[in-house]
Image (cartoon, rainbow, N blue to C red; front, side, top):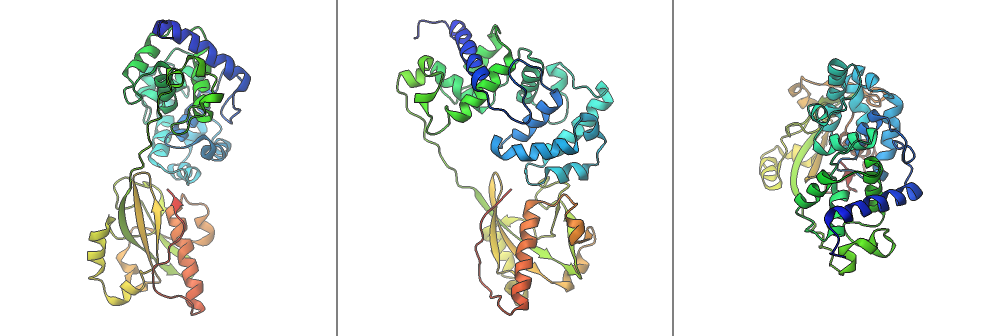
Length: 369
């Protein structure tokens, strides 16, 4: 097994993966059958959506997004608010900002056609080395390095490399003599990684690459997946009501997070200890109205959400925002966090009207970022 040179083994891997992909490829909304040309715009949008997200989660969002923006030109001409509205629920909203800006850049600089040069692709907003490689290889079947987590993991296991060191894998891809369509190879690896060669509990017995895989043949152990505890922060969100309208602002105090998305006005997002110290100095009535809490999970931290509502006396503190009726809220790029806060506030309003609301923490299920 070790007598084969890396390039000889790579040529065998290319053929084996593409043969498997042609027979067992997974149909997806942005894919065409193996060997056929892909729409570069669809490939680009799907790759951006798939960053930090699973295929299963993305599919419905992708279909809705493409129904609204079927061409790059229509995406470029849309308003930023419209793009964010169609992105709501996917999280990582900076991706939507960059996608929109890049579409406008393509219209201005390349006449509405994505450039076929990796250097020019990487000059566009939000497009890095992997996305450029994926678009080059999948859309135009051009030789490129498209090194996502699945490709890194599979090739490291096949060659018996340290999975944390991708330099050797990248070198093999850079030196590969492509005897098969590059896009089919990469998409085949992505499917194999999702179905068999998983990060934890890989299904090696069913994997089509097991016969040439050092990891399997030598019985190497799967590295334990270390689950890191997310840091926690806390904030109080104010639900200001006027008849059937709620006061909304854009963005949050947390830098560029949720940029352009609508949310409820809030205190600064602080560590739990800092927040409790600040909260202890609030008037008693305000402390009593902020006892209802739930957790909202972001990618790199968890936010403890406190909700205070019907505080008319504080409405004058907020001038940069909009009063939004319930019907209009369905048309705004409202973050999932804001939707959950309003839902909790509505529940509190009903309970208060019935005289059933009691102070005290009420843990609710976690909402996705």
